[in-house]
Length: 287
Image (tube, rainbow, N blue to C red; front, side, top):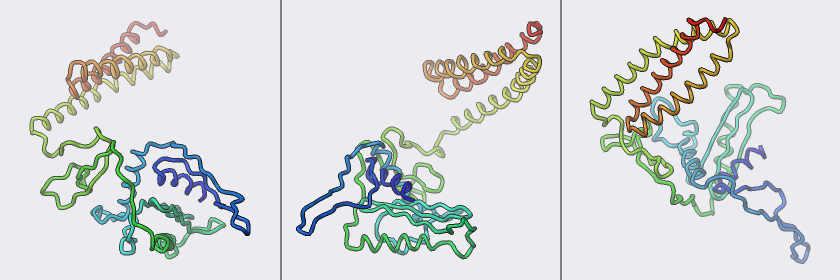
């Protein structure tokens, strides 16, 4: 539990490492400080990412995500008056919850010391203990949350399908992304020509995969069975590096063919590999 709280404390402190301690300060009878805990701040996580993680962990009790299932901590929503990042977890013998905001980090574990299996009616206490404790502790404190870093951007997203939100959507929620990685369009708005192209590419991909892969695999396994292991291994490495990587970059990026170029590179990988293996097999140099 201490290790878990220490780990989450790093996220709660925007990526700054926090050493767990039980004694903060010791004074003598006259108020002189004999000992004062000092924590040398060391940033070990990107503050942009910790902010995004913290926001994501607020979705565990957000009713916007109610659809085919319910958020795992939706039962706490009536008691929540502060904003928290919360995560829960269960096994047959453990039930725990951990959550935080800028003011506190708290974890509660529910289970038996002898690892006895928890009965169906024995769970849930840890969640109530957690929210009651946090709400009581924060009762007279400011309800503060983290400031969004400059390199993070919020975008309205449909929380059910994950697509960029449209005006016609019944539900929408701000999702946070690193700048430059946020969605910029809804795939349902793609032109029919683009959708047809993707379907054709998938068909080409699957057809060549169905024809060339079995041939290549059968001949490769035959050569391996005859002891010609190195050739098949070197061929696979060569085709992966030259075709899948270099040709994908050449066709997809340099020639600006995009997904078409990547598909061609994948087909080329299977074709060249099949040719190499077949030539080796026919020549009998493996004997």
